[in-house]
Image (tube, rainbow, N blue to C red):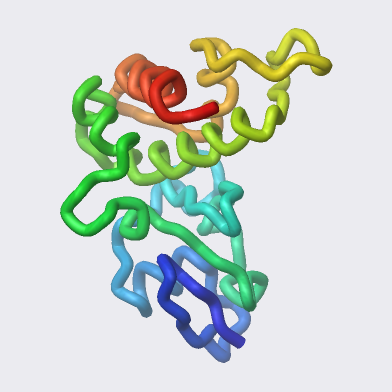
Length: 167
């Protein structure tokens, strides 16, 4: 059984109880994904699996046999930051930075959701693609917490990204 993380194939551990988060952080030396609450409540461990966001602390690595995982380490292109990473810096969307990788990965997934016209629970009309406004972004990012209070800068960065890079 193998899993692909950031384009690199890895053998899955024989121990089926290993979480995806622990596999990446403790066995594969990929510390960018953070262990926050380890209960699925904070979103610090958000990664993408085949382009969809999941909480790595709640996922068993064995569940993702043959799947493709993207972490914050796989988002940048060498020394060039992903545009969302650069916009988080530009809009001061980080303070201590601990939640930032999960926030950025969730924002990438949010962009994918808008691109395919997926509604959220605050989308007013399900027959019309959602408009990427502050209310939509807040709702779609509600699973990611920042205890430093950088949410406004993060939302500004995400809206800037959506207006510049998506659709």
